[in-house]
Structure formats: structure tokens, C-alpha cells
Image 1 (spheres, rainbow, N blue to C red):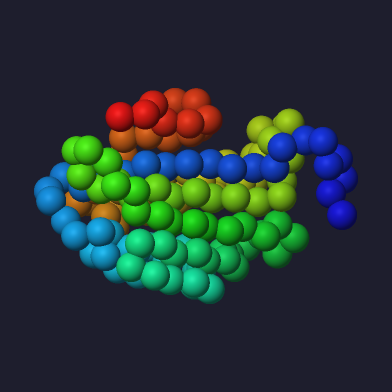
Image 2 (image 1 turned 60 degrees about the vertical axis):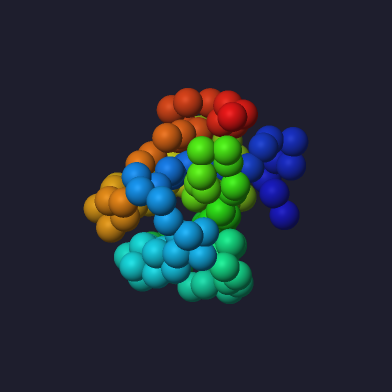
Length: 129
């Protein structure tokens, strides 16, 4: 049970744009190394979606990673969402730390993708194209 159900739960979004044209299915397939680096367990995968549970160091905090390919006028983008039940009222420090780790690992292992939006930096939702 949530300690305070009125507080929104942690949700951090990272939007990545391919630097070169790429098939949507290859964006999801390209997440394999990242999933391994995050010590995550994939529980659902399609050519345009992936969901996984992160098992690393925070036993008491369950983290979920969702990846979705979104069609945009300028080409597909990959949206990565990291969520937990940690309250955002205090800034969700544990989830934020995991998100920052996710961003670092994406930049190291997925150099073919350019970060174009981070919810911790740019606001809760990206601008519509």
C-alpha cells in the first residue's frame, strides 16, 4: 500500500532520435545491451515495444522500464520511461539516480541515438511535433 496515495509516483522520460535512418524494429532490438547493463528482466517485447523490470540494487523499490517506438513526421523516435512507486513529492531521489544511470548507459551503448528530451530537465512532456 502506498504511504501517501495522493502523491504522484515517479516517472522519468527520455526521448531518443536516431542520428541516421533506422527501422522501428531495430530501435527495440538495439536495447538488448542496455537491458543487460541495467540488470533488467524483459517481461514483454514486440517490434515496437519493450517492458522490463530492473533488478539492480534497490530491492525495496521496484523499477519498471518501458520502451516505445513513436512515429513522428521527421522519423521514428524511441521513448524510454522509467517508473517506480517512489513519491515524486520529494523528487524521487532513488528513481532519479537510476534514471541518470540509464541516461549515461544509453549515451555509452547507443551512440547512434541522440537524446532530444529528458523529463527531469525539460518538463513532464515533450513538445508535439
